[in-house]
Image (spheres, rainbow, N blue to C red):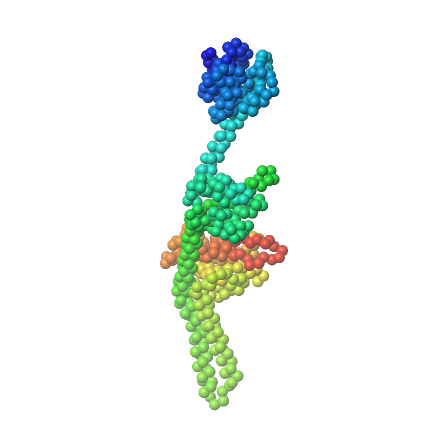
Length: 526
C-alpha cells in the first residue's frame, strides 16, 4: 500500500489495517472530509508514519500479522512524539476483554467490524477535534511556560518557591547567583536551615515562616541571610502565600542582596552630613562677615554707654569728694551707671549670640520677640543708612519651630538689604517688617522697602550663589538665606509691589496650630 496525502488537510488521520479492502473502505469514507490521510498495512510502517507526521487520530486494526494493534498502540503511547494521538481500535472482536485491554494500553475508542461509514466519520471527527484542541492547549501552555521561564530568568531578584515546610521546590537563576550556588543544589534544601543560623533554636520567629505556616504575607528589609557557603549578607524580601482555593501550599519568596544599596545609603548620608556641616560653616562665615560690615556702627553703639558710664563715674567722684555729699543724688547717679552698663552688656550679648554657631536642633520661638530683637540689632545699620525700621507684628501669632540664630540671620540680612535699597533712593519711608499666619498653617515674615526695586531678571539670578547687585558683595547672602530657611522647613521668595520697592518673605512652620485649625502645616509661600 502507498501513502496518500491530501495537501489541504488540517487534521492527519492514519489508517492501519493489513486488509486492503478495509483500507479502501476507510479511505473512501474519509477522503472527502478534509483530512490528511496516511495509509499503512503493517505495524512497523504505521509506527514510522506516526513518528514522522504525528497524526491526531489513528484507526488501528487489532488483528495483524507480525505486530498486532495492541503492540502498535503500546509503542505509540511510549513515543513522546505520538503519545497524545487518539487511537481508535478496529476489530471484529466484540468481547469485553478485548475492549478493556485496548483501553488499558491507551486506546481512546473502539469500532467494531464491519463498521458503518457514519459511525467512522462521527468518531474520527470527535477525536480529531479533541486532540486538536489538546495540542493547541499544550502549545499555548508551552508558550506560557517559555515566557514565564524567560521572565524568571531575566529578573535580577532571587525567587524561591517553598512548600509549607519551607522546602525549596523552585529557584530562579538569580537565586543561584545571589547564593553563589548552582540552582539544582538549592532545590530540595530547607529554606530556614539554609539561610538562617537560628533556624534550629527558634524556627517560628524566622522570616517567611508565618507565610509558609499561616499564609501571612511578609515584607522586611535589612535582614541577614546566609549563603550556601556560610557567608552572610543584608537582604530585603517579600513573601506571599501559595494558595489553591483556601488551601495553603507554602510561599513564594522574592529577595535581593542590598549590600551595595546600604553602602550607597551610608555614603549618601555621610555626604549629606558633610554638606550640612559646610552649609553651617558658610552660614557662620556669613554672620561673621555681617558683623565685620557692622563693626563701625557696633563700636559706636557700644561706645555710647561706655562714655556715659565714664562721665557718670567722674560726677560720682566729685560728689563724694565734698564734706557732706548728697547721697540721694549720688544714688541716682550710680543707678544711671548701672543702667548704662546693662545697655552695653545687652549689645555685647546680642553680638555674641548672633555670631556663635547654633546648637543642633530647633526651638519653639516667639516670632514677635525674635523680630524685636532683630530690629534692635539692625538699628545700628538703620542709623548708618539714615533709615528707620517699623515692626508690624501681632502679639497673638502662634509660635514657630525653628533655629533662632539662623532665622535671625535671615531676617537681619533682608532688613539690611532693604535699608541699603532705601538709602540708594533717598526715600524717607521706613523699612516695614511684618508677620502673619497664613491659611496654610505657617507664619509668613515679610520685609518691605520702598527702594529701587528688583531687576527684570531677578527671578533667574537673585538666589544663585556668588551673584550680587552690590559692588563689593560676595553673593552668598541670599543663597545662604534660602539654604537656612529650607532647613527650617520653609520657603523664601520675593514680590514686586505695585507702588515700587521690593518685598522679600520667608515662611516658618508653626510649632502648634490652634485647636480649631488643621493639623497639618505647610511651609510653602502663599
